[in-house]
Image (cartoon, rainbow, N blue to C red; front, side):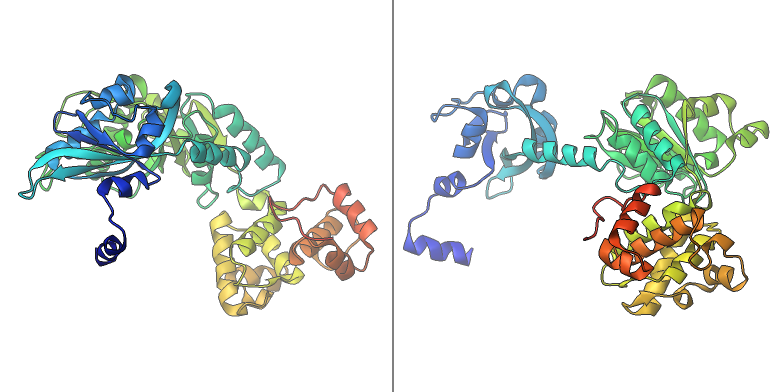
Amino acid sequence: MDRLDALCRFRPLSVADILDALAEGVIAVDEHLRVLGMNARAQALFETPAGGLGGASVCVLFGEETCPLACLQETLTTGRPIRDYQTKVRLAGGRLGEVQLSTVPLTSESGVVHGAAIIISDVTEVTTLRKEVDARHRHGAIIGRDRRMLDLYRLIEDVGPSRAAVLIRGESGTGKELVAQAVHYASHRADGPFVMVNCSALSEGLLESELFGHVRGAFTGAVATRRGRFEEARGGTLFLDEIGDVSPVVQVKLLRVLQDHVIERVGDNTPVPVDVRVVSATNRDLEDLVARGRLREDFYYRIKVVVLDVPPLRDRREDIPLLVDHVLARNPQAARGVSTEALRVLMAHGWPGNVRELENALEHAFVLCRGGIVEPSHLPPEVAAGAADGRVPAGLRGMARHGDAERDAVLAALVRHGWHRARTARSLGVDRTTLWRKIREYGLAPPMGGEGGH
C-alpha cells in the first residue's frame, strides 16, 4: 500500500486506471448477480459495449449453460473467495473457451457481502499446448523399448478412448500408477482430474468415506459434509490402487457405482450421479481371491473389462540401461555416469522390487560416488552381491563380439557416454561408422530427448 500511495503522489490513479491495466478480466456483480461493471479486458473477452450491460444478469454475459453460478453463489453466501477454478465459458464470437476464474466478495466496512468480483483469464491456448505436449509425451514417464513394453503402449492407445474399466496387473514397483496415468491421458478425459486412492492404506470405514464422501454427523468427527474421491474425479479418472485389499462391504458399493454410475455419501441415501472412469491396479492374484471367497466374482468381472499386464524388470533387462539413463538425466549433479562394470551388475540383479528398487539402488550409489562415476562398490550390498557370487550372466562378462553380449556391451558404453557416439566409439576401440552400423543392427535408440552428440 505504501508503494501504491507513493505512485499516486506522482500521478493521480483511479481504480478504473488500475483495473484496465490488468491482463485479467474483472467483472463486478451485486448480490442479485446483476453486472455492475467490468474492466477493459473483460469487455474484450466477451465483446461487450463500452457502456456495459446496463444491470443485466451475469448469465447473459457468460451464457446460461456455462455461467459459473456455483462459484458466485458460494462466495455471496459464505463470504469466502473461490480461487483458480477452471471451466469452459462462452467468449467473444460464441467461442467456447477454457478459462481460469476466481471470485472474491465485495463487502461493506461492516463486513456485509453486497456483491462479488470475478477475475477471469483466458487459458485456452495454454490448455491446448498442454494437451499437445501430453499427446507427444503420453508415455514419457514410462521408460522401456522392450517388446512387452511396446505391446503395452499399443494397448494403452487402444484402451484410452473407450469407457471400459481397466485392471492393471503387475508386481510391486513396476509402475502401475504411471500406466494408469497413461490410460487417463490417452482418453477423452485427459483434461479432467486424475485422482488416486490407495485402497490398502485405509480401514473399511475410512475408505468408504474417502471414496464416497460423507454428510455432517455421519460419524463421530464428521463436523461438515465432505465430497468423496468419486465426486472429485467427476469428468476424469479414479485410480484405485491395491484393489485386491478392498473389503466385501466396499466391493458391493463399488459394484453399484460401476453398474449405475451413482454414489451415496456415508450417512445419506440420496443418489449422486458421477461420470468417472475407474482404473484399478493390483499385485495380487485376483482369481485366487475369487476362488477363496475373498473377492466377489461379479465385482471382479466388472473391474477387469480390459486387463493391462506390466512386466517385471527381470523380464525386460534390456530396458535397464534406458532406465539408468533416465534416472541420471533427472539427477544431473548426482553423478557423471555409471561405469560399464556397474551397469553389468545392475543388469545381472533379479530386481524383486522392480523399477522402484532400481531407482533406490541408484540413489544409494549417488550418495557414495559423490558426483563421480558410479562403480560396483557404490551399489547396495544386495545388488553388488550378484556379481560377487558369480551370478553375472556369462554374456555380460568382458567384451565378447557376438550375439547379445556385443549388443549389451555397445548399449552399456552408449549409456556411460551419454549416447555421444564419438566418445563411445573411442571407448570401444572402433570407428564411428562401425558403431553406427552396430546401433542400427541392434535397433538401439536413446530415451526421448537423450540423443547425444556425434
